[in-house]
Image 1 (tube, rainbow, N blue to C red):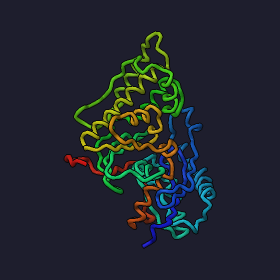
Image 2 (cartoon, one colour; image 1 turned 90 degrees about the vertical axis):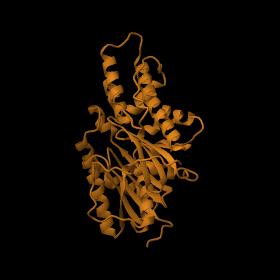
Image 3 (cartoon, helix red, strand yellow; image 1 turned 120 degrees about the vertical axis):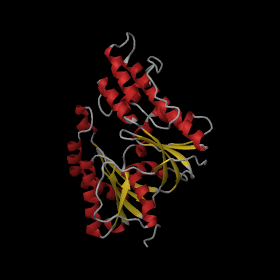
Image 4 (cartoon, helix red, strand yellow; image 1 turned 90 degrees about the horizontal axis):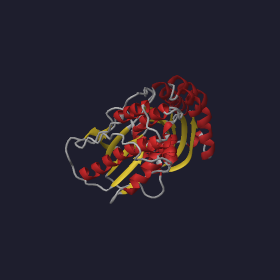
Length: 343
């Protein structure tokens, strides 16, 4: 059994359009976390072009990994294991990261660990200063591809409480930004413009679904599209962004509060790219009677450090992959909640 002390994991994430590599010690200490962003390449298309993304990963993967090793001041002989995100994500992008990680592990005789991208987001809280949140707690993972809520009862112990039935929240942001001609990625642009708008200018619908912890943003997106066909005089783009964002945040906060009431807990963590949204961060902190765990913004968006944090859990358990590890576009985590088990 390999020692879990002073464990250095070289982690790789190529799940979408960011090429990232990190070196993480003992699942907590980030020695490096390098991210090569592709937004400039995809911006003119209004969204991610999968083939462009995978080709760029092939160009950047060795550069990014080398930079991560240099910043961490370590050599390959210091590394305990290689971890890679093998899904969910864009299959062409995932193939690049998996192939590279398997090659490094094989060439240097290192242990290989496959990590679920969603688990990486949940484990991003382990990289924050101070002690990680105590179990159990609620984790909201909200990004361009995912909007899900989990009860976390321990390391790698997840219960799915609710998920989006259609569009993810970040996906809705990107599509609304494209409708408004604001560019890509849409989330940061909409968030910035919303700060100068009136969130009550337009009463966009909220899909609250009171008997479920699921989410739905497709109707909201369609409502924005219909509004833009006959916009009202005196309503600015900033007002549209603010009103749209208010609808999204209201739904997310209501579901978080509903989950905490249902589970009997008081601690919630947020993760994923939309967790970098200033309105959501302020809203979570403003919920009464809860403890909000919010990672720094660089740990919310896709990054390899969170993959290293999740991989350490597998390392401690001796759960390793072999060279048959292949990427998958869809890999759920946790079981759906069947009955209430109070925290």
